[in-house]
Amino acid sequence: MPKNTIIRGGRLIDAAARSANPADILVIDGVIDTVGAPGLQAPADAVTFDAAGTLMHPGLVNAHTHGLGNFLKGRADRWTLELLLTSGGEMFDHQTLEDKYLNAYLGAIEMLLKGCTTCYDLTYGVPLASAEELTAVGQAYLDAGMRAVLAPMIADISFYKAIPGLFDALPAHLQAAVSAPDGGADLVLAPMRAALHGWPLDRERVRLGIAPTIPLLCSDALIVGSAQLAKEYDTVLQSHVAESKVQAVSALKRWGKSLTAHIDELGLLGPGFSVAHGVWLDDDDMRRLADHGSSVAHNAGSNMRLGCGIADARRMLELGVTLAIGTDSASCSDNQNMYEAMRYASMASNVRGPDYRRWLTTPEIIRAATVGGAAATGFSKIGEIAKGFKADIVFVDLANVNWMPVNDPANQLVLTEDATGVLHVMVDGEMVVENGAHRSCDLKALAGKVATARARNAELTKPSTALQAAVEDVVGHFCIGLSRQPHHIERYAALHVS
Image (tube, rainbow, N blue to C red; front, side, top):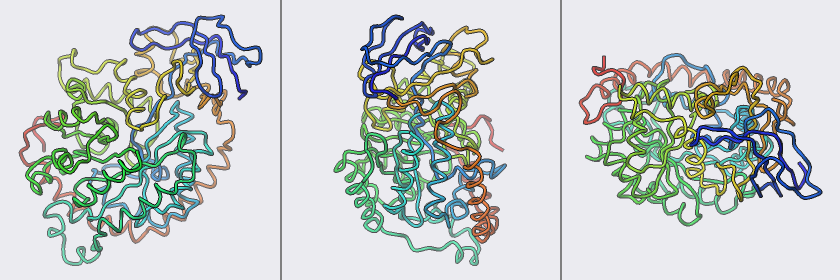
């Protein structure tokens, strides 16, 4: 893209006003210089980009995903979060450096083709993500032309020992099969520090964050150390907090307090901290997050897919929590479509109760998927089409059937658009998707590479798959029992859980 670009002829969405009026946008060096009426003056050397017949909206921000899960779309039918967590070996073991790159690149291409220009990727390594692996994943996002936070998931307690009573419920032969030494905080934090210190990639496009994966899987020392590292390197944190009732009940059994109260006392909360999911947050939890300026990445589709319940996003907003939107991993959402994630957020809000005045509005959802996501990632000057912001702009084809006719642009972006209308996508003033196609990706060649890698991984992980099948009944039965225990809030759709 030339140094100076004048975008003419498009209609710029104003979600709050539920309108999309014609506007011209001047972009200089990848930054929006001026947004004005049609006919806006531009430098003589500015190249004109014809946006006629399109709706322009800010690049969507996926506030929670897992890039290394992109080979696993459609992997399972009925499985809970806890069953998914038992399949980590099948999902992540034996991935080569090229596999990790391909996973992330595949997800980035999908997100860009579907109007998303920034993501928060909680990546993974066995046993830890190395600096080399993180760099490879980061390079995948750079090569695709996308902005990303990479936050390696770190833990020092195994899943089976993190849920009180679960390990003891396993038969002896399965205990032996799943036993592994707990890592220890120092062992986990040292490579995280090294990666932060020596990060070689452009931090304006791909930055490192820290993800103490689930508080139950983290010692106090690991949580405290994560907070200290984030402060030292001025970066962001994200953790899966109160995603399921199993987690909420387990926290009370282990600490006598909620997950949020526990990590608050350990100093994890702050403006750079975001909760992934937060389905089982209560008012006290939400107030704590709001008081610290923290965010929640709301993943309504994944929460329903895994049977975790329905988060009370309205209450979060009422209590001052910054709300963002995420897709979660393809292993539990099956795609990386932020338009679908927004629609799910709307529908999930509606089924929480009959008082439609408490349902999320479409302007609130669009704000969460742009401005809210920007706050969670920590990137500055993204999420809006305004002077001084980075030129991350999506152009939706108004000749697509989704927009025939144009009634309420905010409603249609959330409730009607399904990514089939995405025509062009600009990141930092560079057009990375043009006429519905990624400018540098050969999708046919990518499909071949992905199929080959997935077939190899499926063969290598057969033992892990067999182990996951062996523990499924015990883990499933045990966790159903925890989920039936009384709790002071309810997030399931049914009043009586069967």
